Amino acid sequence: MRFNLIGVAMLGLSAVVALVGGLILRLPNAPVMIAVGGTLLVIDLIWRARSFGTSGWLTNGTYGGSLTVLPIWVVGLIVMAINAVQLMF
Image (cartoon, rainbow, N blue to C red; front, side, top):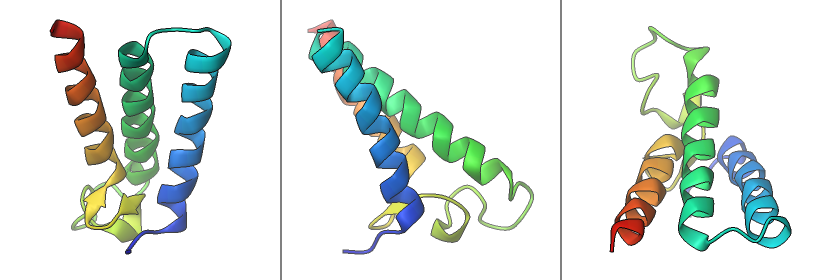
């Protein structure tokens, strides 16, 4: 499995959001997971903004977090989309 430590750290920070929202505040799953996805998105884009203007700054794993071939911000968007659909139905 191809990943980087920045990506693992970002997942760890988003796990804190999941623990607080799900276990401490007892919120429903979908809103908590949307918050987790948003956290992943924001953290990774802030990290990548340091390299803004460099070729591949938005998608290259060396400029931010990544799991396999997906940047963490894409993982955050996928998590948010899946749970937004779950909220609608």
